[in-house]
Image (cartoon, rainbow, N blue to C red; front, side, top):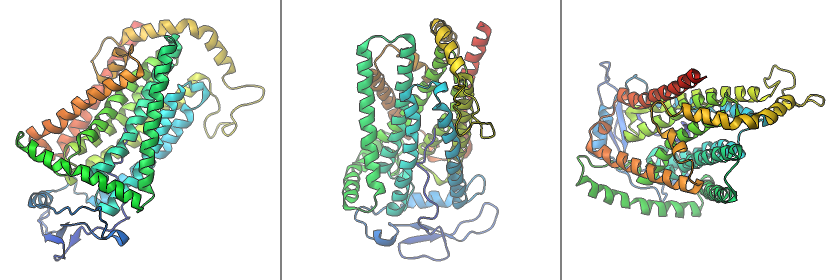
Length: 478
């Protein structure tokens, strides 16, 4: 799943990274290069770096870099020998390249022949709000704090919450689509679903309005909001000091807060639940190409794991390659789901949908409505087969590895509101275990790119094995 928490415009602010002598407010140290040479002194700002009219911003905290941070930065060597500036360039280009395939995905998924439930389709479209809403937050973090968004928690959390709202809209929309195909269970469930959708809509509007205020710039209102957020965030060090008396390690100042961790973890779980519901939707509609969409969503989920892995290691600069990997997985995932959406539309009866095919601009012809014959056949025979398809798919999914994606099936009888509450509870428990459990082990404080890659691709491999087992069982059952 895409995340732009690490993304910051490469040329918005020229921050000093190399210097030959000390300056006011900057500590310079020289280090030995891994290849035997001596690099120029590296500068570590001991306070906020003045930037234009924000040089004396009252909301910019005085973040002195402690001796531990200096020592860690001095000993940090990129595993691939790539500079931070080069990684930023790679990340920016990859994240930018991921937009086009996602727009292609939305184009094909939005075709009537694809029959994607309306609320789920809106959820996929709402992801664009997350993408474009995160960019001004990254710019604001860079201008005011001279830092990446992931290290400014009060901005990071609300920005990422747009992704959680996206996933919940997709999950609820798919559940609505499945209920409609199965005949529903009365008006009561529909009313509860509508209330849940309305709550998500209000949450989305409120979050978007907050981010829009940030994007508006240096207005006094933004300053007041930021000042209030900083005041609330000032409680975190006190909590960290208390926690330090119970755990082996003290929590770093840039550690994610519990609410921000909950947002990240819930996004991962909700995406898996959506994958399971899409697989079930394929059986319900008879359009088996929807299962290809589940497969296509695997790299997107791996991208989300990469983001969480970066945060698990407290956004260490030694793991810039992990962020680049996240960006690469986003490009790959958006491409695979675009291909899957194209196949779904074709299977549903869409024609002339490629640029080099006739009728791409105006695909609907007067004498031959696209998919008319196919839709008629589906309407006649599909209703009789839906129940059988659903039952067969449910039987096939009983085997294989258990996973988070099974929660959609386990909690299928719950209302949407109850499902959201359960997902929030599970996400909170898991997030608390990650946030404070990581203080009891050493590896988050000793960043290793190879361990990070293991944490990313290990669960991804298990995810793929799970779906491969389900696919094999379904083929054997036919």
